[in-house]
Image (cartoon, rainbow, N blue to C red):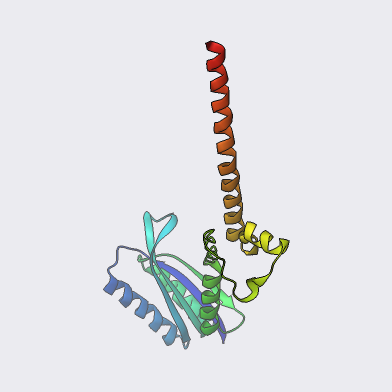
Length: 196
């Protein structure tokens, strides 16, 4: 006995009841041919990448089963006879599929793909009043000034680095804008004096 995985697409023209009935018929075909159904994975109705037999969407179903060659050949023969099946494909598997491991793997990849929330920026320190000294921030001297000047350097994520670069760019612009304004005012005063 070998392990097989059969994927097939059911036409979207069938109702939900007819689709469930068709899936149970195909499951009975596997059992009649002395196969053992391991798992049925129903993905549901999905959009196709390209039209197949004039259908833009289909109901995706995956059978995981154990049986002899006659099991999958009979299943494929049934697929050829039914108009409801628009595409099918059978794979021979070397090992019995384990679905607990796949579920754990899916969860792990979902967690990895989730974008990490950037660290919250520290609250700006108030210039008014005495500073509160707590815990490890009791450092003094130039090291403390460096930490105050650029607190964003502590962030290790890409998002944190990008935020730090944006903040630095904004602070440079803020410093440069008043200088440019003063220069423009000085030039306009000179132009007025020369015009008089």
